[in-house]
Image (cartoon, rainbow, N blue to C red; front, side, top):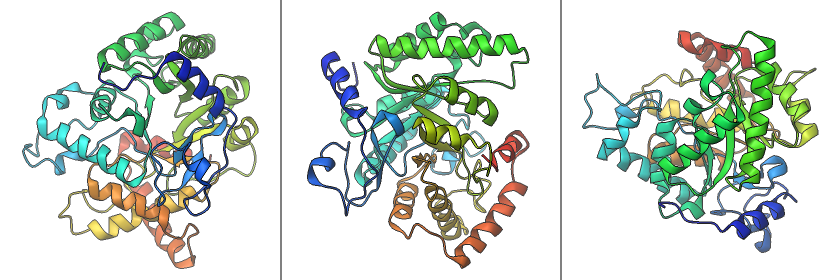
Length: 369
């Protein structure tokens, strides 16, 4: 196997201990005994408790997507580029791509980031390889969505477990820290089918934990109402959720998904913090004339998101060492935005919504959560 092995006894023991939980802590206030429980601890990083899992994760984590990575890889023909959907395994044959992902993971480890989320076949294979020999430095979130409930042939618990087994074998994973199944809604119009998918998903998550394959479980979805219902109905299975939370998202005053999240002590990873990069003016290249401005926008966005204590961590997709350093810097900057910064971010998010690509306009549905 290419990943460091955890024994079954250690797996069960550590998971039970973590379920007791820890409080949010930063480097300045952490006691030495508590610091030793934090994976890949760095005194310059803040760590937050991932809900009822008890895991202490970095306040900024690594998202799986590598959009715009073509601007970093000089050997690529810009017209060809790197797959933007992150699910194509062809990138894994490119030495320069592998080098980039290894370097980004290495810098994440250097700055104290200790969680990476992978939600496609390509991402899982890439990050399994990137974590080879250093699995003890980062938790791994897993969703091989091509073999999950988005597709009819994978909508039974038996089939989802079969898909999990196959994916773990292909990627060389002995266990998964977080299996979070990606749930569809837009493709299911029949309520009965929707309920069957929901029940099968929970059965699969329970089986994975019982069989020692997943330490913790959860779901991700792009539908707020369904997510709130699932959190309320399945508190045992849904320990962590992933959903969009951008630089202009905010909590609804009534009937918010955060009501259920806080009640059930669920960990939250915020996806799409930069709204599919529509927050930025430049193309993310190192020589972009908008680089400094976009770096500042990224830090403002991350600081704003971290201002919501119910968000455990945003998980931006980072494509360079410099972007990792910029994200880590946001943690060390003053958390609360002043009046001038709020106005600056407000102008940027007005353009962000206007610049959304047609296939990402659904993000507007997550302006109020």
